[in-house]
Length: 457
Image 1: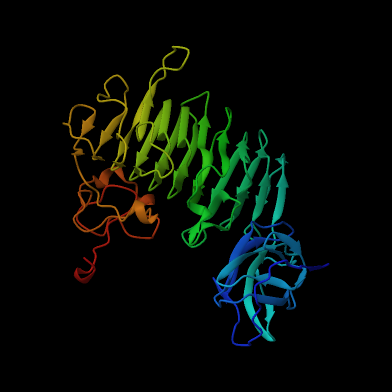
Image 2: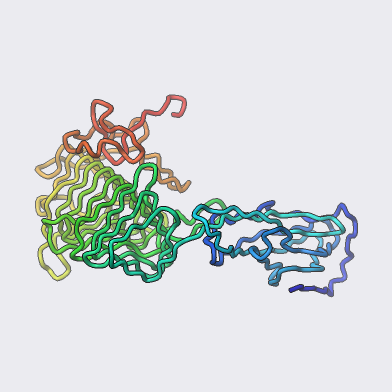
């Protein structure tokens, strides 16, 4: 299709070859594009910095990838444009979309092309790039037989991915699940997701582009629904799993507290609109995990058999005022029946822009906090044991720069304040491979302190 434009503007045109275009960017980069699907629109500006009008005789995608990148010039769609006028000292928009064909390979394929502009006989180019990634689509899929999801290609989830009752499903190290808007995973059977330090398992939204500028969609909550472990689902094992950008986080429902529902090891549950972790009457164990950023509660429990060791619970949520405590413990259900607790939080940090706990006393709850760091001030008692009150973990986090890094700076009040006897040998190394037992005293929180060189302070 060829589009031509005429103008009733009587401004004088420049035909001088030195009067050419200026662009707001020299490269339009789409980063990773899921093949077979359209992309969000990128844009850039064409400037005419001369005083006279310019006539752009031709605009087109001119390289080998023609058919993969599409243009909209100053509000008009087409594959090729002729005689586009730009007033003196004015500008127009160019919008670019991409749709890449499947590459039939596991690894992303790099595509590079250029948009060609011809003005006064002078050819200018703006580069267009994208990484095309094939995916395996799971559309309202129910897994009813033992299944392995592999790391070969990402899985794109629409609707609900269901692990059926009495079905065991394994995620191999390095597996990535991309969830479309409102998509979720429902576990009725058993999930075994054992990532490694080198090959973590990723659960995130399917927006791989940028919100604006260099800010990636990966920082946004509410991109997909969440992960639900249903009543009757027991023996779920997750290690080195990074889950982020959801609405409802990870939710665990159980009928029995004497059968373990979920074990988390060196996992990160980050950035949810409501909460990152909910437990209802469930036995949940966690070692070395980070639970961070939520609009209401970071962790919310209605009863349960809870054992959390060397975990960090933090909240610097970006997108709204925080509407709840970092750790919320409820010993009564909505219908007035009692919710029973047992267990402890050991060597854990509770810190951020919200109250750390919803209760001041734990004697009615039955949960112990031992060698924990809390932002609030208080005193030890029978249930708060050897805690660091009013402490500052001195996180690397810089909220205003979108840096959410919960390692410990030098001078942190969490350094060497934990109790090594609470941390099992299996949890000796943190997510980054740092040895918790390397120094005389174990540090509080998910991340072992690494001394910073003096020149970095």
